[in-house]
Image (cartoon, rainbow, N blue to C red; front, side, top):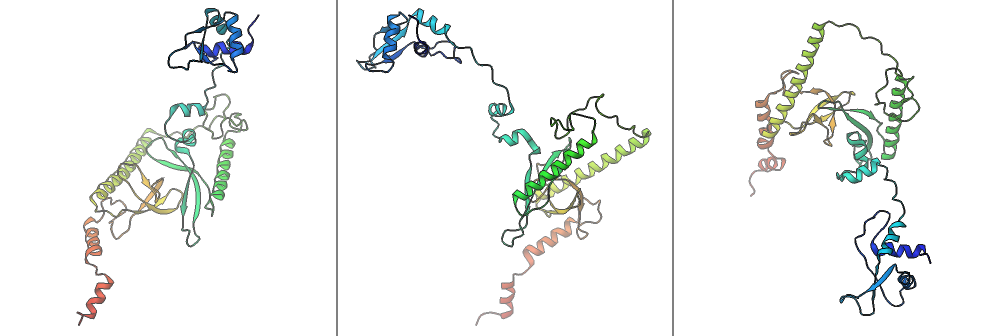
Amino acid sequence: MQATPQQVRLLQHTLGLSEHQRRSYRNHFVAGRGHHDMPDLEELERQGLMARVRTPAFCEARDIVFVTTTAGAALALERLPEPPPPQKQTQYRQWLDADTGCTFREWLCGSRLPKFEKRGYVIDGTLEYRMYRTVWDGDWDSYRDVQGQWASTKKEAKASYKAALKARQQAQRAQAPNCTRCSGSGEDPEGYLTHGTGAAPQAPAAPAVDAETIHLQDLKNALAECQELRQQLTLMDEQQAGSIWRWQAVRLKNGDITSGVVLAGYNGWRDGNYEPINVEQWLKPERWFASPDDAEGKTAEYAAYRHAVLYERKSPLRAQAQQKGPAS
């Protein structure tokens, strides 16, 4: 008599075998009178595929312990199903295995994850939201490549951001109309894939530039970067010493004027939410700076002004009390 599929499963369960576990690590099955598997266990015992052994002392006296015989173990191994194919290594599984502590959205997008910024206040009904995305320029700075319009709700701000993102993607596809990888296939919605030399249209040749002009431009760029870095380092040193006004008026590359700050330990300017911003010009007040190129500022004059504001100005209550004179 052949063992039924249920009886084969009992043999495999006794040995701890499955399609994922093909090496046995145990050999026992404990059952008692009235157990629902007892008829199948007794039938396996009659076929010589299982046998009864002594019940351990830690079990109840009425329990019966079955073990598989050599023939039963061979049958259990023979009837094991084929192992399933390995799971496809997806981004989600990589995120689960990495255990980085970041969300799945952060794992997929990295620093390109869209963020919200806000302005105004709830109490007067001027609170607005805007969604944007920043990307690194490959050096030490970041800039906004996509941003939506200001809206009264996050839902509207997100819809505006999606519209801006779609317009940017269409503009990128329009730049490579002959490339199937960017114009309709959906494989590269952002346009970051490298085009093959045969598929992409040839760019027009750049005008010839002499070596002296290139060298002069490189020097100008290096001086500009050094000047900006010197200004940032000076701000950091003065902030740590407590002798610098913290927030500065800056003009962004999109033309907006806002308040920015340079934080010690971070590169570049930050906004009120301490998010990176792409600053084009540091708007220095004439009262504290001699010229736009002055990175130090009138430190002594500002220190005297700060001391007068903090320590020499009388409070309104004290001035009113002095006018009244001593109490009678």
